[in-house]
Image 1 (cartoon, one colour):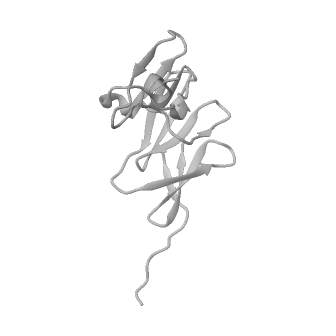
Image 2 (cartoon, one colour):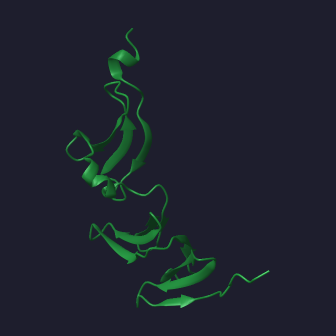
Image 3 (cartoon, one colour):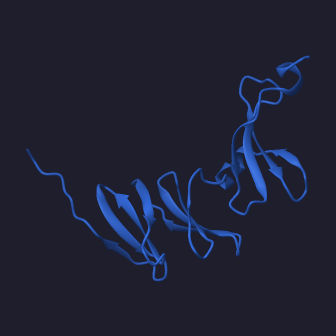
Length: 140
C-alpha cells in the first residue's frame, strides 16, 4: 500500500455552501508543502480547486437560519444575509470596526450585534439601527 503517497493527505474542514449545492474542504492531494481549498459541485459531479480570488465565496463556518430560510452570518467583522431563493448575499453592516453577531430578535425581523462593547439592534425591514446599551470606559 502506498498510503499518502497514493492519495495525498486526508481532506479536512468540510463545510457546505448555504445553498447545499457544493461542499468545500482543504485537501493536500499532491503532498505539496501546503494544500489547496477544493469544492465538489453536486450538480455537475466535478471536483475543482477554488481560485484564490474566489475565497470570498466560501460559506461561513457558523450562521443563524431565519424562519424565512435566509442565513445571517458574519465574515471578517461584517454582517451579511444570504437568500437561497434569490441566490444573493446582501451586505447589512460593513464598517472598519469589528462587530459580533449575537442573534435574531424575537420576531426574526431584526438581529442584535455587539460593537465597541455596546449592543445594537438592526431592523431587517427598514435597515434602521438602534443602540440598546451605552457603556463607556471611565477613567480610573
